[in-house]
Length: 535
Image 1: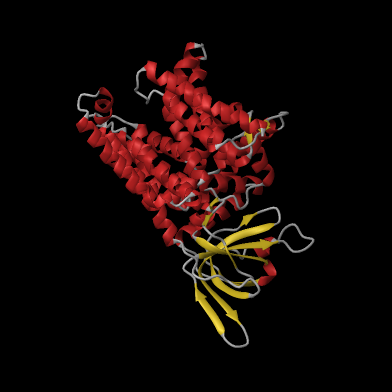
Image 2: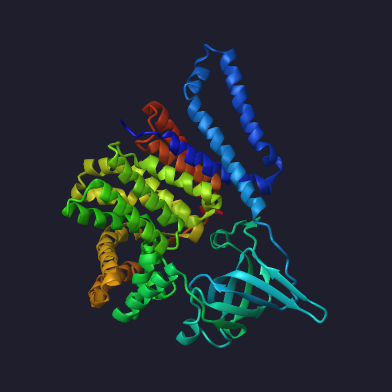
């Protein structure tokens, strides 16, 4: 039996589109209140017209796809409903007085992140107290608080001894002003606030914070233990890089490495994503195939290891997506079904958006899915094209890198205002090398957690990171490696991604239909792109 249900792909797109349209309509007009009724009404009108014009080929064509249209309608409606459910759920409990200094009590919820003018972290389990001459006003918050800590005047950093106090689980008392940080704003969705569940912010110096040692959670303890192992057995520059690529925590990532990776277009290797999960899957399958492990045991091991890794990475959208997709693919093989990558990733996307609807506005989520969709949609036709023009053994890796780049490029341009011209070549050379280094790092880390006396092996691994680091530096030194660009209009992006779908092998329409549609869609994008350059 073949496990092909492409209807799930359209359900995922409809769910995401329903959430996006609901957000767009909310700030443009009030008609979103009636949007679901309008869609359902059009659906009923369609059926009525079909029965009136039974012999009409136009309506007969659409009625043969009634289940697809029904699923699209339902998931558009679900997307509308989920967005407004979130909007009604995230309400500000109280509006702080900007002239009042509050005492803010809470627990550090994440490792600090260093910025140019300070550091920031998030605290949970927050109680806010405002004292005046007449009474004490106390608020127990349901939300976390974002804490930005400025560097002291004349300083560019804090000492290690001071920063070591900012550990997950430690208790804090902060004296400072408090302001609201709305998740829903007319300028867009604050996805960082949504992911970290905060609605308030405070901006202070470290002198305004008192730390009390607390109890660190299990997964925070594991992450901190791994961080310390890397620090003790690797050069500090590559210890920070190793920890960043393993769990996505960039707290101690060297700024020079971050800059070189960004300019050379390989910054995605330090953002835990499907690439990391794919390398872990390759390592696990290679080991288990060597020992000829039973397929049921193989599935159980994969689920356990990927679950462990997702929790270690604090359940970021990209690693949850890639872990779920890997489990779906292995399960399909286990039950004797034909593998359908597009269905697997679409199903994982539906599950994630049902649980966390606002992920559709999260850049990490979008880049993660667009990159994988690009591979599924464009890899085969690009491989065929490069093979026909005698690329030989390079046809497959070039097609793989180019397909992911094609789908993510517009989103990267809109988010960062640039595109790495040298990125394609850098990815072709450095990413495969990084893959081997990452798999060895992951395997050795698991071994060291069980057998600590083997930690010295990490010293050898850092030489692999040294090669990747120097390679990124060489690519970053290439003149004009980055093109500065203006944001592309959203309507042009719709044309771009629609055209990419029509160009793929997953669009099963006849050539005489899909080719004109692809040309029109890409022409719409071209107009929007040119207009963005002229503005």
